[in-house]
Length: 67
Image (tube, rainbow, N blue to C red; front, side, top):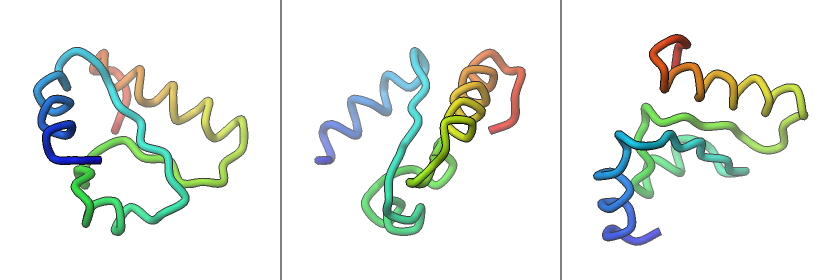
């Protein structure tokens, strides 16, 4: 993920939500430019876990849920 891609995504954050998914830890991703306060789900995860996380992300974009 290069810096120009991150900048263009950051400028469009108001229009969509991003859910980062990785087998790497949040700390490692943060060291590579992923915002510390972003939505994140670590691998592996169950179907129920991903469903709840997606719901959380969607609700937070409407101002209903907690990030």
